[in-house]
Amino acid sequence: MTKRQLRQCLMKQTGCGLQGKDGGWPCGTCFGTFLQRVKPELDKSTANGLWQSLLVYRGDYTLDMVEQTQEAVDKNIVELKRILTEKDGEKNE
Ligand SMILES: [Zn+2]
Image (cartoon, rainbow, N blue to C red; front, side):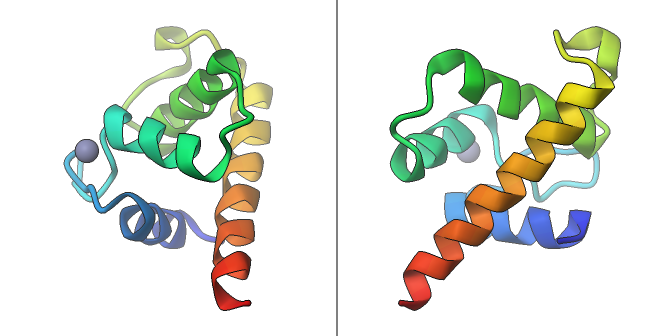
């Protein structure tokens, strides 16, 4: 999944594209609501880690603005893509 595909997928899932330098990325509230809907078992700190990682991945935040290492960000983005792919899979069943 490319960055562009991730953005389109998130927009489809959250219905929100209010943020981002170039626009088209969901805001934190809609992102949080989406995660709660598809992954209600995620704890708050994991969900927050995914959100912070997305901000870095988008290019809106730098690493020193979040409590994440580059490694954690990379891992979280892989996880987020997995969640989104899983979500799409469910819908097609
Ligand atoms: Zn929103």
